[in-house]
Each structure stands twice: as structure tokens, then as C-alpha cells.
Amino acid sequence: GRSTGGTASAGQRVLKVSWSCPLAMAWRSSGRSNDELVTALQMNGVLEDVELAHALRAVDRGFFTPPEVGEAAYRDSPIRIGNLHLSAPHMYATALETLAMRPGCSFLNIGSGTGYVSTVMAFVAGKGAVHHSIEVKQDVHDFAVERCKTFAAANDAGADSMAQVQFYCGNVFDVDLNAAMKYDRIYVGAGCPANKQADLAGLLAVGGILVGPFDDELLKIQRLSEDPDSVTVQRITGVCFAPLVPSTSPALSLRLPIPVWHQDTHVLYPKQFRDSVRTLLLVLQRPSSPLAMLPKHLVPEILSFTSREWFTPELTEVERLRMRLHREVAARRQAEERALTAERLRMEAERQREMYQFLCQRLSATLQHAGGDAALAVVEPFAAVFGLDLGGHDGAASDDASSDEEDADELLEEGDPLAADDAQQQEQDGRAEPNNLQQNFSEEGVGRDTEMREIEAI
Image (tube, helix red, strand yellow):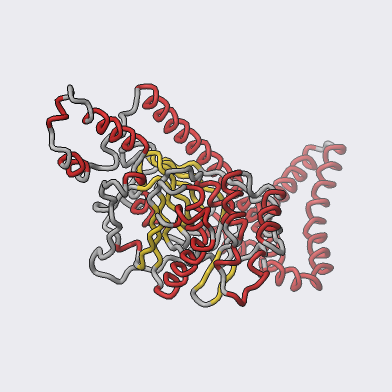
């Protein structure tokens, strides 16, 4: 991997399920040795898969770092020396555990870096698995090959598994997708653009899982069937990885070989294929079988033209229904997530509108004090565009005061002393209000400039 310290489609429709998985005690799983590092990952709840933990203990992280790193290799932090990059241990633990590697699964490591992930996955997958690793930089590719060969020579337990790992120096974007095999597991060790997500997902076999960073999000992508649309996407966490190097080649120049059946490569084929070949060879040994009449050398020749998926059984009706249920559940979760997102956006927009409404009302009051209705009338059209209310005009109050004066005159003419007194009192209150406003305005004049500066700053 070439992480810079991640913490933790075009042409194809996907069912997207978004959920967050916080990394417990992330960045705190350091140790002074490889065993202490793995133990810390387990104690902090970052690493739970027993088989993966066993592989991480067997593969010393420090062996795949430059010598000058020393004990810093076991800190829970990324390493970057020149072109050699390793992600933080908790990041590897999270990504590889999500990958759910199982013995016999074919594996593609994109951006294989120093070879650390390839070696760990070789331990989990075992000797009977196709294992391809791609690295674009020649010096990093050479470092990984040398480290993996040295590790295999010094560890008898991993020698058989490492013998199946094939390293290629090239760009994954130069791979001919139509001519490439399909993999059960794919790990992307560098940031990939979202518009390349569908291309990489096209390398997955049915039931296959891809884990990698796409636009600063670690995603789990799973293929449910041969249907190109039957892909689910889950968000694991936010990350920050160094990007994959874009391709500069005008042609698809990188070819990942598809294994050809032979007695030596028989172990690399799926269990269903191996069982079928075994049955076929047993039948050929029976003299009563019609197949016994075939020349013995012809059978291996025929098998060399067969596909790895040739003997894969078709899905049962129950399996199809289960897969359909899985897609429908994923679609429902996607709809729920979209609804929650829309509700959050609505509430945020409402909160911002209330804030702007409050600011506009304050601005309205300030303008009325400073320039009266004329200044307010200039701002009103702009506020109307956003549906904001600047508040009432003083003109309405003036109209009410004039009406009160007319009512007072009428009552005086009619000679009702009590009503006349009330009317005269209302008239005096109406005349007193502008005087009070003027007095308040004078008292607030000192702080008006300060308030205007605050409004402009807001």
C-alpha cells in the first residue's frame, strides 16, 4: 500500500449502502515489536479475525520497511520513505478484515508497494490460490520482489504460499479487462478516482469482494451475480491515500495471465474444478467406461482449454432468491440513507434561513434608524428574492397615528368627554412615540457605528 496516513461509476449502476464504521482506538495500537503491535490491534478492537491476526503475526511488518525505520515500523502510523509507502497498521487491519480473505481465494493486489500486504494475504489464502500483485514504480516493485523472496526462503511455513505470488510492474489502468481473469478478492492500496470504480469492479468474480479507497472513502464493493448491475457498495470510513498513478500508455499494455490447466497448476483451480477433474480421471480408469477408449494424452490437452469456472455449479432457486433479497435489502438501506441525508440538509437549510432572517431584521432596524423608509426600500427587493421578511414600516404606525387624530376630532365634536379624553390621550401617545424614538436614536447614536460594523462583519 502507498497510504499517506489514512485514518481509519461510470458505465455501471450500483446499489450503494452507506454506513460508517468508526475505528476504535485508531492510531493507538503501537508496539515495540510485531507481536506487541498485533496484540494492541486486538486489544483495541481493531482486529478481530483470528486467521488474519495469525497471518499478521507470522509476517513481520518491520521486514518490509527500509532498515533505517527500526522500531518505528511497529508504531500505529504510516511510513513514507521516498517511493516506499506503508499504511498505518490499523488501516491495514481494517481493510484486510473487511476483505474477508479465505483459503483458496484468488487475489489481486493493486498498488502492492513493499509486498507486505501480498505476503499477509498469501498466508491466509494458502498455496492453492492465484495471486497477482501490480506495482507501477520499478524501484518499489524490485524492493517487494526481493523482500518476498527473502522472507519465503527464511520461513518454511510461508514458502509454498509465497511461491504462488506473481509480481508485475505496470499500471492497472493498462490492464485489458476483457482478457483478464476474475478475482475473488481485490485490494487497492492507493487512492482511485470514483470514475474508475466500475472498471476495477469488473475484475471481480461472482461473490467477489473489492476493498479500496475511492475519493477519500474506503469502500467495500461486492459482486452478487453475473449481472453487471448487481454490485453493492458499502462505505467503511474516510481515508486519505496517495493516488494511483494515471496511465500514460495509449494501449492496454499490461496482461495478467489466466492460468492454463496443467498437472502443476491443478492446485490453483477452484475446488469444484479440481473435484470434477478428479472424478473424470477416475472414470477414465474404468475399462467399462466409454471414455476409456480415448487416448490418455488427449484428456489433459482438452482440460488445458477449459475455463476456471467451467465446473462451477449453477445457482439454485434458493440461492437466487437469497441474492435477490440481498439486493432489495441493499436498495432499501440506500433509500433510507438518502432520506436521512435529505432530512439533514432540510434542517440545515431551515436553520440557515432562520439565521439570515434574524440578520435581516437587525439590518432593517438599523436602516430605519439611519435612513428611514427610503433606505429600507432599497434593500427590500433583495430580501424578497430569498423570501426574507425585513419587518414592518414606520409608515403603518404613522397611518395609525393619523387615524387616531381624526377619531379624536370626531369625538370632541360629538361632545363625549370620556371618549374625547381617551382620544386625546391616544393622540398624545402617538405624538410622543416619534419623540421617544428620536430620543432613543440619540442615545444609541454612539454605538450605531459599532453595530453597523458588526452587521457588515456578519
